[in-house]
Length: 325
Image (cartoon, rainbow, N blue to C red; front, side):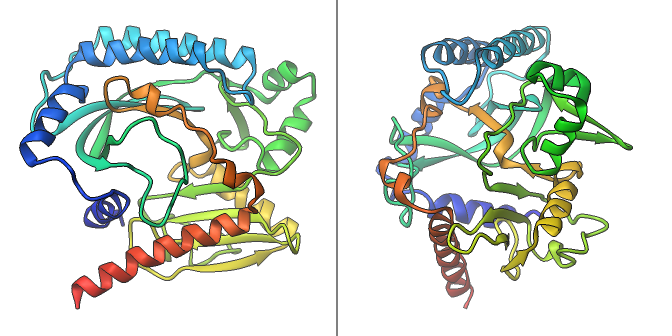
């Protein structure tokens, strides 16, 4: 189950020591949080302008056109929607853009300082020192991306529906949705390249009918699938982010990996982090989303990066255990 206290611990761990007083934090909140409808509308347009200036090299021109059109629809929905305003007491609005659509959230905010983390030196380069994280919140409005049949999606790529189904099975279209025996693909989804990219999945409630490949999946709340670059083996790593439990790594053959990933992709309670495009929770927020991989990452294997993440998670757990003793 979702553990609010643990999420707050993770946020605090990932933040440098505060350099603002409580009064200064509140002034920062009033100045930069999205507290009104006008704040949200302004940031939608700002995000569109930023995306025009900085294009993701792995995204096509058609993708940016579809994204811009969906942001226009989202803007119109917000305009006609009644929102509480102005918010106070560190509550604010945010919006997240994923391949599946755009969501407006109402969130309780925490201020983080230089959100790089004590065990993540130079993990990402951010343009800001003070940013907001959320320790609680819920969605209040969603504009979904149009769902395409496999035939419609395949036509855009010049392939048959069977090829699209194969892409889903191989974990190249992780935002695909399953309705009975039929698959649909959101229009913002773009197929990954030939090289397999590790998949990262998380869930906040126990999953019914655990997969046979990982029968104890509910002992954790997230799972990463990646290929070990040294051995070539498929590896699934069970991890605990919001809950306390056992973590372990298992080796899968190709058939087991595909079956497990299909289970995760098709499950409505599972969220795939790979489908995240960008999000905004403060004024000029789209600027903070213009992340670029640190140069040091280019020469590091996925398994090495994964080990670093696990070490940082273990540090959080150790500190939490020590504080309880």
